[in-house]
Length: 195
Image (cartoon, rainbow, N blue to C red; front, side, top):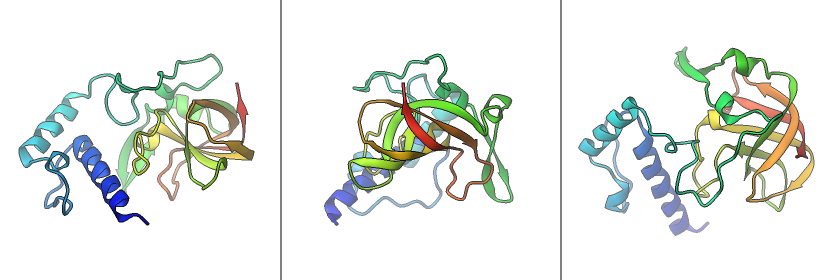
């Protein structure tokens, strides 16, 4: 494995996580050799924390389409579950675990055929995929998730589909997950590409 590439990815992820944390991690140390731009000071971390508490401006943050993205924003379409419904999930701490608290709109989707639109994030090697994540925004880094579990859906297809950078629509049995061991909130099974 190319260790320089891995280190670059880890620095990218560290910078992303550092910018998105709602409170600084006590005792956290910078990665050895990390550029100063990727390591925030305690004051900067506290400033970022207060900004996130006050609310993230529209078009910024994990799972939200950025204004400077080279990709066009996904438009809501009739018959397709909008990401605004999926990302409205809340969380709570239960027995030292963070668990989702679903709205009535989200639970109404469970165990029914649904269409979801998004960007493919491969979970398998190769040009054809049968198991991937569908995300609300495209990946910007091969090492980073583009958002939290509320902004992605695990997809398992009936037949392999060709990977693409363009948005796709999948249709299949939608599952709202109560206690997924991987921390996922949503899954579509027996999926096929749709329009």
